[in-house]
Image (tube, rainbow, N blue to C red; front, top):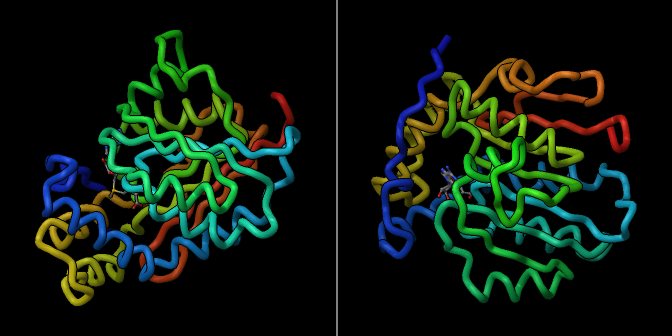
Length: 245
Ligand SMILES: C[S@@+](CC[C@H](N)C(=O)[O-])C[C@H]1O[C@@H](n2cnc3c(N)ncnc32)[C@H](O)[C@@H]1O
């Protein structure tokens, strides 16, 4: 079995407007198509109970350019309540066109340029942060949690549990099939940054019940699901079962 190994990814070291980074973020859209991320999220989100307030508050951690959830918004829009979406990422790369496209689906978007670990420290303690005091119906994380290990990963999960009623995360699956796939992303036109990061991502990915094991107690208040999806993905879902617990 592959041992989990978290290493810095090249995309994270590039400036937001570096053309190589822009190319890599476009690559990620194709990677998500191969992983089937959008349809997985749509399926999972359709199962959520209707929000008590009439609108959904969703936070995406490590949201990148926000394009993945835009596809989700388009699929859900005809049957879903309005959504108040915050796209949090260390760098601000959500453009005005993307925000306008969300608007056409009835989703209002706030882009928050913040380190997710700062957000998590604030959400679990008393440090000030614009989004720390907020509660979320749902937190989403895609190709993001695998950047973290040990106490940082536990902190992020604790912050999500403290501030929301649910989490959906679609991460790389750490296994031989996904590793083989990660070596082939050049075939979908991925640049050198994406090709390198894809391999690192799989080695930092998850398997079995690794995220469940890190979810904070008391776990009886949550329905936790963690499993492989398709050839390359690892899904973790947490749903609060005790309202206002
Ligand atoms: C592989 S990309 C995934 C982007 C997007 N979620 C997607 O699936 O297309 C990882 C993203 O996490 C962001 N990121 C990495 N570390 C972060 C941190 N500590 N706080 C906030 N964002 C971070 C990066 O800037 C990048 O946009």
